[in-house]
Figure 1 (tube, rainbow, N blue to C red):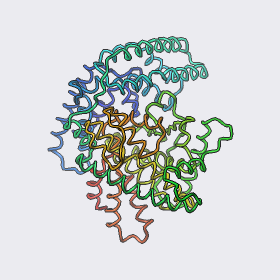
Figure 2 (cartoon, rainbow, N blue to C red; figure 1 turned 90 degrees about the vertical axis):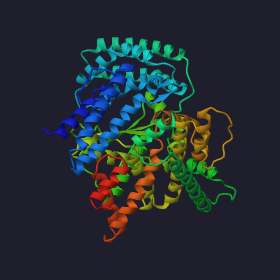
Figure 3 (spheres, one colour; figure 1 turned 45 degrees about the horizontal axis):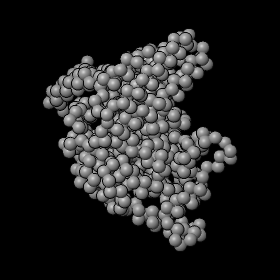
Figure 4 (cartoon, helix red, strand yellow; figure 1 turned 60 degrees about the horizontal axis):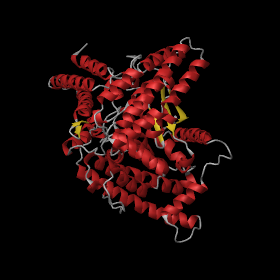
Length: 566
């Protein structure tokens, strides 16, 4: 085993030391354990990451192999991001001791064992049973870690913890259905865990909190740099303002076209047209429960795949599948509309994704016959599922285990336009594009809000949209911008803001990635003018993009240049 391979294995072992991360990678490590939430573990983990980073620097000086150099660059970003997550500060202390994550930490691994594990129910239930037995001590350690939580983050955790009994009840029913031999002990562990969760909620609710969540400018800049994005905050802010201006002009133009098509009054605004189209193209449930909307998504997915295959637009490999399910109640606080659990990168076998859709009566406007196709393009094939499933069959492990927001979200948001450009929606192209443009304004707002939440500087919210609120509540300010830009329901706005505040640097990755991926395609097209048809260029670009595995677009550019694709 050479030095590089030893380092790669050491990095994977380091990542898999966290029981939830191990499951997320698809590795059977620490299946019976919950994560260690203590401050001491965080400090030790940052120290170990620094040791690996020093080893990486040694290897970099001794190799000229291009592929290894790319992998080392990805590993460096991974390690620096990990170190920074444990060392960056807010309010005079490290951030992670002000972020309660009990709900997510308990749920993530157990939910993976429940829904995304190929082993027998008995084997998985044994692991879940063991994990549940550790819940009381885990919650005690979480409370001991916390100093002065951020108010909003406390609320998110309280909501997730409040809904965890839904998961526990589902697991108990599953155990009964499968005649699980350890049912009695499982039921006792569920009861004990439920009691411990009540105690944790009371202790968490009693803690003094702070509304301050801004980082220092240096830490905020490091967050973005660790995501492989090499743009200044000023450049990012300008991109957002220009994008929103351009998109609003497109919406205005489409409004005029659709007013004429549907013979609507001259004074019909874009907002009124949006409401009109939502009503006209509303999913007809005919008295059936909201959950039946899932069937419309599954049907749409089949139509999209048929359209793609008939035109050979994307390379879709056979050993993959995609499940579409309703978002469990305990995940609704952090999934405002839809999300995807991608295939586990190091698990062999059929590459399986799980798409979650949040379905409630107050969110029906988010699920229309115009919005459903765009959602499935984004989350399924050719979007996240195809790109991330394809990455799991890459021969180089670093290209499988790394996830980068700008690449993943840049790809999917590009496809929202591309699939309309090639005629997927037929006679409803203008209607679908109007809805899509209205919705995609979110990625402009996300840049502004992400920068604002990270820095606390209101200037980043100035993207050409007048705001009425003059106070200092960060979430009211950000919520007004998001609602004005997108027209999202109040429920979705709050759900969006929850994860914007907690997943620093990720929200701005959507628009940044979108711009970078379009620029990459433009350069690719210029280099491939020898191909006869634009369709052939599209096919070649899709093949090239999907072949490189997971990496930031800035690193993709290096690979494309090395391959002489640009």
